[in-house]
Image 1 (spheres, helix red, strand yellow):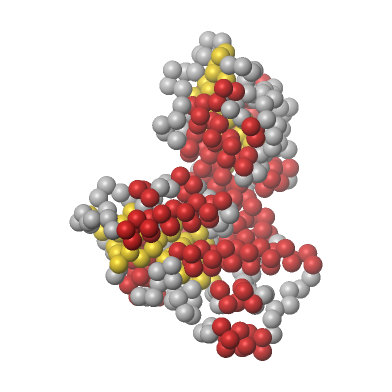
Image 2: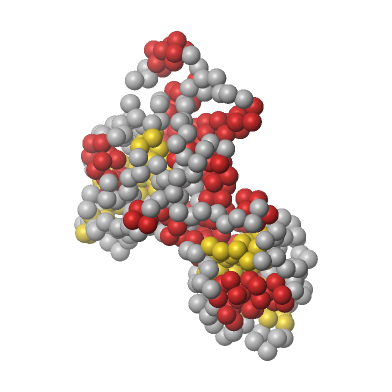
Length: 425
């Protein structure tokens, strides 16, 4: 995205927001503040689903405009935010369903439920209601940003989020909407459990020396492509978001390929995948923080060919509460997931040894980690992806069943039969 012209970047970001149903045809607007003081902003009354680069409006510092359309009617609050917060260079405003639910209840989503959410979203606040497009609304939003907020919910309206660039603003926006969805799901299960300041205050990155250069084999090329394909598919299925989740595949012995740290999951390329082993990685790259954990799992489990860490919205709802997760819902769930136990809160880096001891391909291919997410093992990338997909489908079904009445699990004799027929340990 950094190589795109502001017009292209705004269009691509809006298309992504619209494609994943985080805004409507008529709702929302985006802007970028240019180094020369100009503002590039989405237009007023143009279909968000068919936005083109030629539709983007440029407003120069003296107020003159370039473009085919008038700028968004919300232009005043964009201008005022940039004036009050010089560190903000891009803004996302939209009306995604879960954040609108919080805004009409005049509540702020709790970000202290997952460490990556807390880290990405920054400070979240709420601004009082004012009529859209007015100077009054602009003043109220800008004042809230001036108080130090990075994400601002608008009472009975939506959300406005700022960032150092459009990529950061979008990632904050998507992450906040995702945690809002998860919190709504979790509220149907019981009390949401927050992390303590001590638990939130640690985001260690393991140290890595450099792996020696190696000739790239056809198998490595194939695995790099497979990881990218399934990571992008997982994003499209909403099993991952742009800021969270890691996927790896065993290359040879204890060497593996893993997704890089802080790289947009939808923009993953074969070249960006990192070759690694415990304590070492490919020259000039940074692997995911989960790389140490994956290395330890591969060392302990020679039958594991792929590993995924993820925080999908329905499965994460079970991670944020004390509600038990039953995989005895339909045969597929039990066969693919086994029992899927929940572990207490453990840090991905500091507690990697402990987590690695808790999983195995035959008996525990899937575990939930309290306030962290799911850890899934597979024989290969497809197998791990299938388990993640089944986990999210299972937890979604359990949540959808809540208003219908008590869930009736499969009886013990049915489980015994599945274990025997499908060789489940």
